[in-house]
Length: 305
Image (cartoon, rainbow, N blue to C red; front, side, top):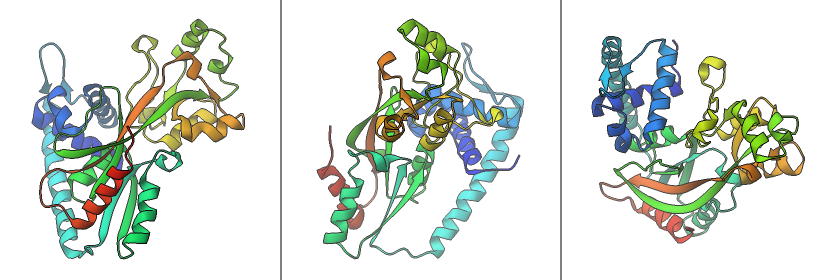
């Protein structure tokens, strides 16, 4: 198997679960819910074609092959982290640099305060450079913990929890709904009963910081990499919904143009919206950099409930 960025993040999730001794115990360290952790481990097991751990009424335990994989993962990640530290030592970043990580497609949300912060910084602190990287949810947290980001702006929904070691600033809420193309069976549903039947048979794509938001009894098919589908970005979900292969959970602000032009149909009338709470995060310990603190306070001044 060739390693990708996604694979490395899955390996870090597996390492955290193994160190913590279970899915529930790893929630605080990873900042994601137990079902989301389970989904990540299942994806890694699928990629490796083996079972890494046993989980159930008898408790959590690594399998024999899981123990072998953990040894390789520890060795690999230690090497990667050591190399990253050496690379960081070589560089000499300016003190006027603030590195911000965001999840994809936030730019179309009118409630997102980051653009206003960028404009204000350009006027009041012309020497300040703000670097923005776009990541999925888990990658944002990983980059923040590795001190490759100063601030991460991410959304959480449902039972997801923020990492315990971070300082969090509540910014705004984002509403997401289910969408499909006009020729999808879900678009032809006339009643709530018809919709539930159509959705139960549908493939569903959702963004990375929402895990299985649909009613459990509908048993939606959230496809993994073995089917050629990656459930991680909003843009990929839009491709799936527009091509009529999936029902897509998309932020309403992001789907507006396609809905207006008739390329997507909103299914919001048949289900409750998913509300994602967006937060700015920074590591809670250590001395605060004045440039980072300026951006942090600027974000705080535009925060919405």
